[in-house]
Length: 336
Image (cartoon, rainbow, N blue to C red; front, side, top):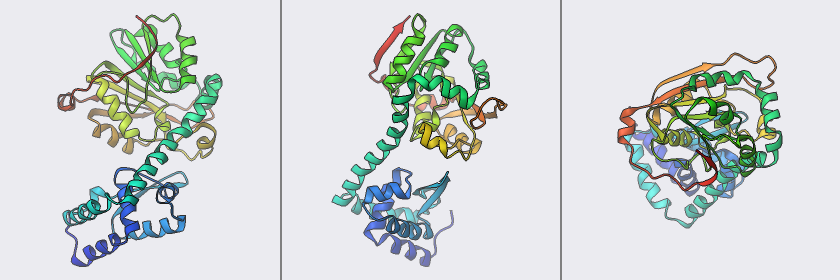
């Protein structure tokens, strides 16, 4: 990495000299946030936030990405040289212990919780209509991706299982299906649908902290769920934790699109995923052999084109992972 000139370094020092900009950078060190979210966290006008972000970005402290009509900002960790990192660590150690920074941290947690709430509000009111809405939006051809999972010896985790449609389809062909969801309305519908299936285990839990033990399953399935989560990287890493070494991850989701209406009507947080971004996330979580395959469009579907992405948990990554006990679960149905 090229070393900064004294002039450039002085510019970065000037950018950090303002307490507001230092607080902004602290908030963006661990979380990717929008201008509106930063406005809520720092309790400042949007114009003020935008002005400070512009200066920080101009001095190389920030990077941004577009997601629909929003722009998400985060600290430019990968592009900072050693001098810049030392400068930031020095400023951060002073700022992070201030009362303002502590209040910012509490408001950040509230903002991130609100992201998840938007999706959960949709689920809590739509369980009865979910199957019809999903069929109308995505069609039937998405189920083709399930053909890669059928092995009678496998234990499969259906993560974000919703009303249990995919669990129901898988159960006759594999040793066991563990269905995990955090929506009580969805799980209530799943219990009715899956009643009588002896190899199905329904568990209440969050995708970011799964109620499964390390290496418990052969396959982890994220079927049309990743676009609802605030932190896909964390969810993918957690899926890797519960997979056996060499276990398979299958992600079925939307390719990048411009359907803004899906944010409002169905609580989507992400407008699809491209191969490059998803591949980077999957590989950073300890997976090998990443593949990304667009699925043939269903002529009856009204939603975006889907893809199926697969990868295997690296045996090297598995050996480095620290053992972790299974999270406490709320057993809703277990017949085995």
